[in-house]
Length: 168
Image 1 (cartoon, one colour):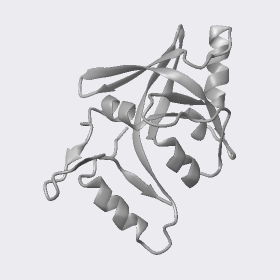
Image 2 (cartoon, rainbow, N blue to C red):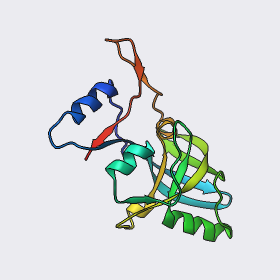
Image 3 (tube, rainbow, N blue to C red):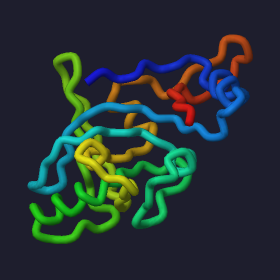
């Protein structure tokens, strides 16, 4: 599974995309694929690192069962089909805050993060492909992919996020 490389000078790129005619919404997304583990339940998933506000605005065909976390909190939001399957395997309902271990193998090594379960979501047109997506915070996705946490703009000396923007 190929991951999208980082884009230096994200702020300037984001502003350039926003200024294009016809672009009314956009969302930063960092992608990977990994293994989810909650207790004895394990499943493969496509991992999308997102900012909940911009992702929900750009992908307006998504419904969150609970309000997504705000601010810089760490989270994983499972697709409702993933949640139901994990609950079936565990024999109990998931509870907000349950620890979810996400493992990503790359380059002969593994990166592992444990983050709190923060609810579930559903796309309005579910499919086998979309049902495999789990949403995590951007920082967790970047760490799983082995990306740094930011960059310094050599021109201005200011630090900022180093993310990939998807225009809609």
